[in-house]
Length: 102
Image 1 (cartoon, helix red, strand yellow):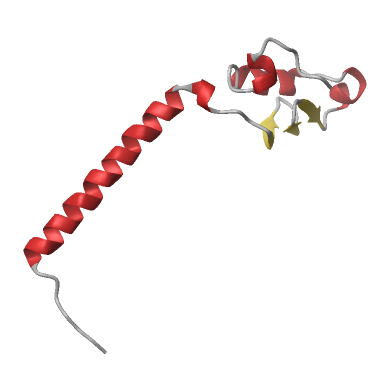
Image 2 (tube, rainbow, N blue to C red):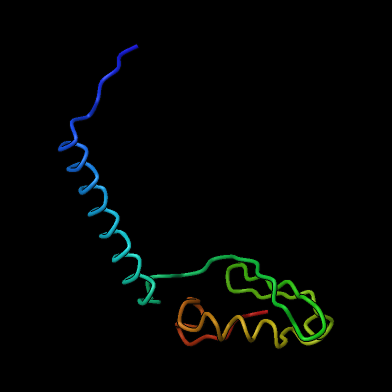
């Protein structure tokens, strides 16, 4: 096997380059996270901790669902509305001024 030591100056240069690159990535991530129009959710599932129980809310290409009893009879509930409010401006169908179809 080959064995060699990286010269301390070379190590410092490599470390500085990686650190500089990471700083740039973090700055870009911060900028992206503040520009909500960069994101368009297609599908996801989230657990919402309700006052009485946890509920699973799903979103799939504009269609909402929730495992709550109220959602099953009304097609919407406080859990889906809370997630919509949380993601305001990041769901394509809502960003275009259309309500989510159920």
